[in-house]
Amino acid sequence: MLHSRVMNSPKLRIITGLTVALLIASPAMADNFLTWSLGDVTFPNGGVVSGSFTVDTTTGTLSNIDVVSTADSDFGGATYRYASPTFGSAAALANANATIILDADSYPSDPNLAGTPTIDIVFDSSLGVAGTDALARVGEGSCANADCDTAVTYRTYYQASDGPAATSAPEPATGPLFALLGLASTVAAKFRRVRPWVLLQGHGVNAK
Image (cartoon, rainbow, N blue to C red; front, top):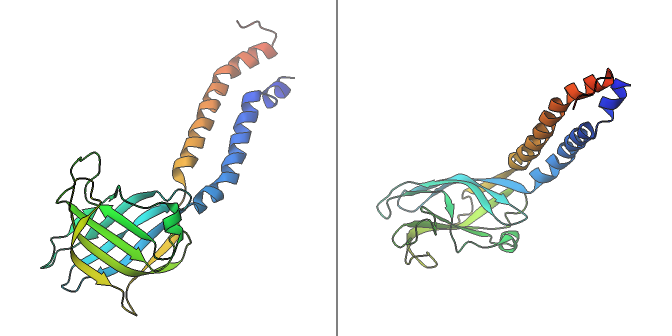
């Protein structure tokens, strides 16, 4: 009888349901995230751009941005970790010549981006499908105003027939999975707390 009580516990059924949901949801959530890695882009005077970023193909949101440029006689180089406030949407990413714009500083955390580094990267094709995508153009310079909706370009790379390309791979959706795992752990903890009461009840003890 005690075994039946435990196995039929609503909390146990919840834990089982969450486990099944994790197994079902994991591949679907991973399909929404692609991490793109840039081939080394070399500007005419020697500066190089490399790095990676993750695209949420459903919302068009960028994350895990880590793009770095090195210095040459045209520009001093920078590290880019923020999507520009002028960055496009999921629809823009789904089209040919998908474009991303990255800033070295975060707006509006920094309310005045004027003079800070910015870079725009134009691809041949969509960023919404895994594979290889040629880099059509890369322009780097400085923001011309506070929210960086215009910029001054100091150096530009244009696509060569055998030039560098970006490649992508699905990104494990660890954030949503950890959230579900956390919920499952919380329920499991509550289940463990009520288990002594079930054992006592099974032995005919009134535990109030």
